[in-house]
Length: 78
Length: 350
Image 1: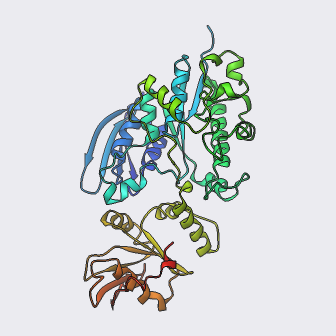
Image 2: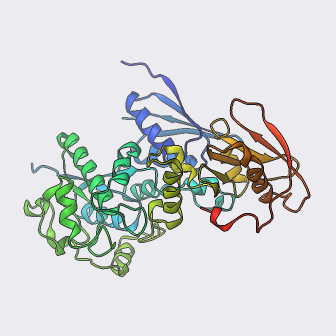
Image 3: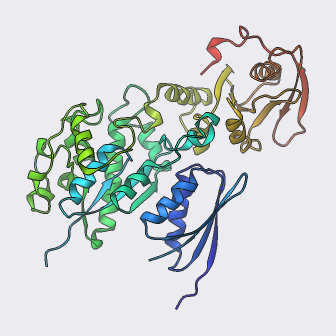
């Protein structure tokens, strides 16, 4: 059985929907159970990435917002 | 057991595609959505940049629509491929730089590719929210077969909202879809769609028939044409597309233009381009960050600085200290008298 692994995606400076597209493409390379943290600067990602996660059956783990940056962590489901 | 036929729907995030999907879901058809990002989509971008848009709802309408419908959505980056659609549209442009008919053909052809790739998973037809007569260029009785033929979709392209005004397609002829339960909408009247939205319980949907593409916007199209003219070539990169959405654009000389932030939000956005562009900003007063696109001759520096001073809080001061930073060189500081309103010539504004 494959081990769960953690990954990071740099989507800083990209405007929506590019962070979502990058997330979608990255998730295609990952396995079920893998954890992905997306770093982005467009505040729109705070609604778009969770929406993409919900409709595609993945799982939101956290969304942390600092002054200039977002860190959104998701778990890949099947 | 009968095969479960599935459809892929072009989802723009507007009302028509939302309804087209729901009409098929009512018939038990499983649908997934596909949305193409050309770089010119209005979605979010400037909302995320400008201060006065900070309170606007930041949502991607295609994702929102998919969530309302309970369908998966595939967002596809077609920025590179789309260049050929924009630069060489076989069917020409609309009122501005909008190649709407070629764009529709391109998107349906991409959906055809997707269906071929996903045929094994049961996908065998495509739906769109097109309505005859809805759009002057791309949604007319004459263009419906053009889209179907030139995209390669032929009879697997179904338009549930106006299907009864068109010849039956394969999904109807094969009995996968009940044609009698499809619609015969036509024209620009939105009332039938609004009534259907009400019936299905959709509220808060994106502005019906609203433009979702910057290329239909005159100001944006003018800036794009100016960019090509200024460079002597019709090429563009993603950063060019983004920068046309931001700031006040002034071209004092054919060789260069200034992109002047209109508020703190835009200044912050332009900060990300400091390393790529010569940039100008006031030091002695608050003022907008300004990027220089093109090759600004040395003798133009004072004019450009005077313009930048004009758009800052030092506009009425006798002198403003301005910093001009050229990537890879030491920033230069100059004292400049801001240009008066009359000295900023009308024809400089792009």
